[in-house]
Image 1 (cartoon, rainbow, N blue to C red):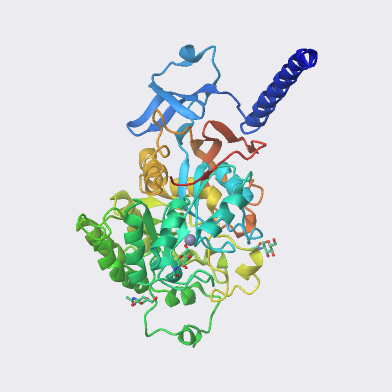
Image 2 (image 1 turned 120 degrees about the vertical axis):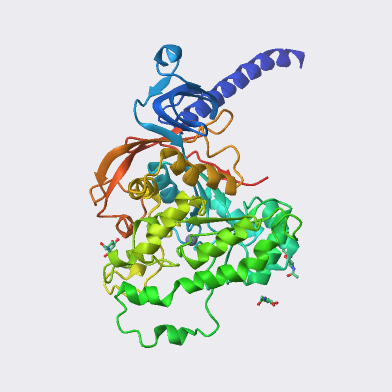
Length: 504
Ligand SMILES: *[C@@H]1O[C@H](CO)[C@@H](O)[C@H](O)[C@H]1NC(C)=O
Ligand SMILES: *[C@@H]1O[C@H](CO)[C@@H](O)[C@H](O)[C@H]1NC(C)=O
Ligand SMILES: *[C@@H]1O[C@H](CO)[C@@H](O)[C@H](O)[C@H]1NC(C)=O
Ligand SMILES: [Zn+2]
């Protein structure tokens, strides 16, 4: 027995060290597939690094996926020599974009979009974090079980980090334990609709449900996002389709969803908003209005509520900033979305509101579908699926159209990184500062390109993008997620190493 031990033990320990070595090298190998520049520690140099304190010339040190230091100076090649570094010269290094409004549609509708395709497009567009909407997948994310299905379906498919909003629906709005468990399972907040969502298992909520939702969210300090359009009582669906002669005309569609619907919804939310004030029943909760299109009466109501102390924010989307109703050709249902794209004056007002700080941030509302549902053949605006597909181009679109309004890199970064990260409770994201995740987009704001079919488009369905045929400024060169170079020069890292983000 003793002799046996004498012989077996060294053999076992030798075997053990081989196994250990194997595990180490294979994990190193797989980690290196996460990045096109696989180094534990390295420097990124640029003459234009967008930091919370302004745009600097200098270097960012990345270590273990985080930002280890940010140093200012014009000639840093000397200090980083001997280490690994990437010198981007004049290209801009900005925090990666955080998109709080993306429909990734998986599980259940991967023929529309999916975690793999959606996050590849994100990486190619300089977005490093997406927050997935709870509807358009099957089932909708309205419970712990359905949230788990999402997380499960996302495994090994994420090229960027992805968090999840849960759904507030009449079925769970009065059930505090259901909402508590959804929050405890890691939903970053809730989303609800004040009008029919078009999805059967995602019914609309009224202002009572919304108040209940806010009260439940208060103790978690997480937001409730609301699609604010209210269909008037006098309106019936027969009325909607009665007397409509030209279904291919955009003006026809625009008339069916007037700005007064947005205004009515926001008016109806007023008392819920007041509950989020200090001393209110929902103090600690936050209300966020998604995809504002009406920059007139609705915006005025939002300004009033903010100045009265409500914890309130609002987003708009690139398509409302880029297009106006006069530009949309008959039958071109790529531009159908809700609320609809409105007139040119309204578009100018949206820009002013953004520049004046009344609109807090921008999100994509990337909402793809199978191309057949867009009914391109018939061009029927009334029956086509509503939703704009744009994820990959939100940075050049916001920049290109914003240039006419004199926007700065710092503003762009606030709208697309800092404020969205804050809304989603991601305090290590959204800014280039020591201790944060090393999430960056490197891009050339001055480089123009024609967005046509020859351009590399990583969307699941390239041709439903609303921006095809436009000339844009701003080309994404590289994207880093937690220190991994996940996209560079048209190439993705071989392995998808983004992580699901669950609130703790
Ligand atoms: C509340 O939700 C839980 C699931 O979290 C469920 O078990 C319970 O039956 C629900 N209660 C009511 C009254 O619907
Ligand atoms: C909202 O709907 C619920 C039923 O689900 C109802 O009890 C409540 O009174 C409604 N609130 C409003 C403001 O209509
Ligand atoms: C887009 O591609 C689909 C096939 O994937 C096709 O059915 C559709 O007609 C195309 N639409 C346009 C506008 O080119
Ligand atoms: Zn949406």
